[in-house]
Image (cartoon, rainbow over all chains, first blue to last red; front, side, top):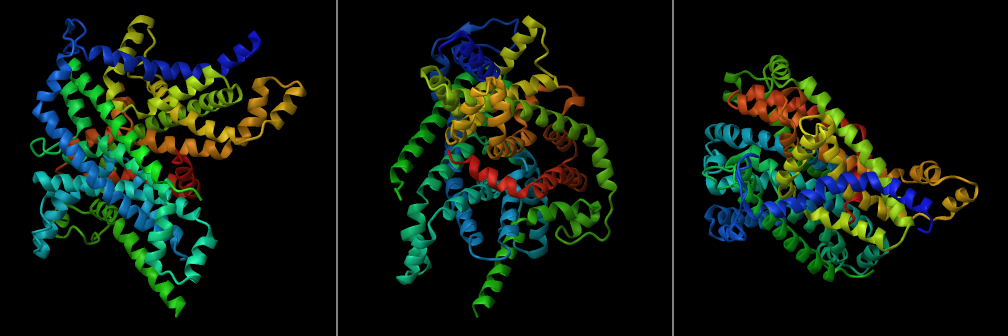
Amino acid sequence: MKTNKDRAWYLLFTGPALFAFITVVIIPFFIGIYYSFFEWDGIPMNPKVFVGFENYLNIFKDARFGASALITTKFTIITLVTINVIGLAFALLVTAKLKVRNIVRAMFFMPNLIGGLILGYIWKFIFSDAFMIIGEMTGFKGIFFNWLIDPDYSLYAMVAVFTWQMAGYVMIIYIAGIGSIPEEVMEAARVDGANFWQRLRKIVLPLLMPSFTICLFLTISNSFKIYDVNLSLTGGGPNNATEMLAMNIFNEIFGYNNFGYGQSKAIIFFILVAVVTLTQVAMTKKKEVEM
Amino acid sequence: MKKMGSILLSIVVVAIGLAFLSPIYIMLVNSFKNRAELYINTLALPAEFNFKYYAEAMEKMDFLQAFFNSLIITIGSIIFIVIFSSMTAWMLVRTDNKLSQFIFMMFVATMLIPFQTLMMPLMQFMGMIRDVTGIPMLNTYGGLIYMYIGFGVSMAVFLYHGFIKSIPMSLEEAAILDGCTKFGVFWRIVFPMLKPITVTVIILDVIWIWNDYLLPSLVLSDRALRTIPLSTASFFGQFTIQWNLAMAGLTLTIIPVVIFFLSAQKHIIKGVAAGSVK
């Protein structure tokens, strides 16, 4: 950037995106930090009372937020396993040399295109009414009952729906990873007499580490931030048993009108997401092997 | 023998795929049944294909209006995201200095911020802009599209940035020698070369914006402006007990998604794979 003309071009090209980005993301982010030190009910006429770090200290005494953090962590850990195991299994199935692989790939990916909100509503019918009717018909009432009225089962219902939504997505990433493993390596292993499991454990999985880094990042951050499925499937119930962090924050701000306190939770939420995902990326990156 | 095994495996794999999509089947068959039929056998095919509930759901959801709203908002946002992000990314890559690096890092770092951290201050700030300048940021197509641009550019710049780094500069230099302006160089030479990554950006953003619920629920309060997820949510709040009607409504919302998927399946799968290499 030597001349004024170059500077003008630079501004013309980067200006529009930067302006929108700064006004929508950066400025609200700092306003959010500012609000988190105040007590305020969101009504413009009412005063904002400066309370320092009190909001942040109150978070640690908030049993409902604590329960929410715990249930979100549990949900994230379970879905981390289910989504990736099923997604990888699908990827291995559809990379076998079959004529039907493209159709099946599309079938597995399909739920991902439907939004979380609508998926949640479809499954709400299945877990509540359809399950009950099936249970009465078949007599398997131990499995087929209304999952959404039981605190534990409604969490598993969320796990099932979210796995259904995300498995096809990570499958696509694993397929790309498997596709980049050189055919000679696999052929050499086959010639040496390695069976399917040996090839999987000694070759495929180690070489898939970059895909794992991405998929684990995506599943952890998406599970941790889940909101839509939560809203439409369980609504946080029964008795707030499945109120995830994102929903807890939404309810605190827009439900109970605790704008300042809710915003301090939102800042803590950001820090949690950042710490958890960055730690995971650093850990899995270390395990990636060079070809 | 080997052929037999592969046919057998094919059958098993297709069966798994069908089982995986069984919730869609349950939704579909029950959207045609009357109440009694639905409760007698939830899993069976309907006795007759009765489109009564579709007509009713369509009317109660204001489906055509919602579809139109979703279409305008999705297309409007994506056009601007693509134009602004590709221009920005190209300038950042080709002007390699501290400022460019800083701007790029800012885009990347903020991708971790969850929407919940920004939603309340964003609504406050947009309200302030409206009050001070008179620009209607809330409860309008334009305001919502503007916010989607603000949220969408970081990932799009990131994807374009990675792609542009891999294309050689020689063509652009030749064009500059021929007297082309930067604008001309970008639109005539660079942008057409970005097509694969543009497709990726478009697909990832369609999936995101078309299905997004929380942001439009905060920005749009007018009934007539509702997008498909918003009208589904309000429809569902009213008619949960009438499952046949609810299932017909949900089927309606899925039809455009299925059409999009079938018409661009190859691009979608490629786009998702390319977009995730972070």
